[in-house]
Length: 271
Image 1 (cartoon, rainbow, N blue to C red):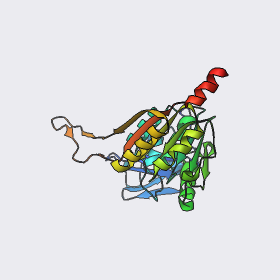
Image 2 (cartoon, rainbow, N blue to C red):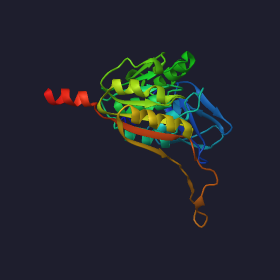
Image 3 (cartoon, rainbow, N blue to C red):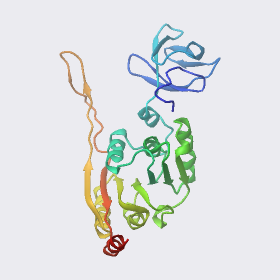
Image 4 (cartoon, rainbow, N blue to C red):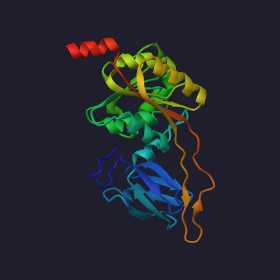
């Protein structure tokens, strides 16, 4: 992913070609080639060296705007083999996890890498996200998606079952999106630094209950579960109203923080 200061379109970039009807296409810029749509084709040579935000006409005279892709564009237009985590949930996961530049994060499961890419974006350049996944084909897809977004260097993709243990120690956060997160809770406690965070995304309330119970049994505190619903608005003078369709339930997000065990508190006081 390009830095925000780089405003020129160069060969090899991914750009977002936008129609006025809000139809967008994520495409790679290649010299001498064109991108074909039902509204005609756009020549990449007409864009290379120009500023982002440039309006270019297709062969049919239709206006396209060449936009710089945002993180959400890479997420929503990534190659998928599984359901992705939506930006509305990712935003809350990142905020409540407390991660930032330099953070060390453990994540599972990787899936298509949408959440992995988001975490990598916020912990770069000195941080690392160690992502566990049991299905090798998902890892390959995630690697391609991370590479396209320019975030692969900040991720460590591991073909391992996290329910059997976590290799890393003194990590800042453990982020889970898998079927049995409660099985990971004891391992997460051992892997986290004092006051580190754990975040679990689950589609069903039964998973939430089991996870919350495991968190309380393993000396996690400040346990909280939320659900985020997002509704867009149709904005037009005299006709503004909520959109008919909305992104409602996608999952429940459970957060908690690690508290020290009594013996650890004694050791800390002595030290």
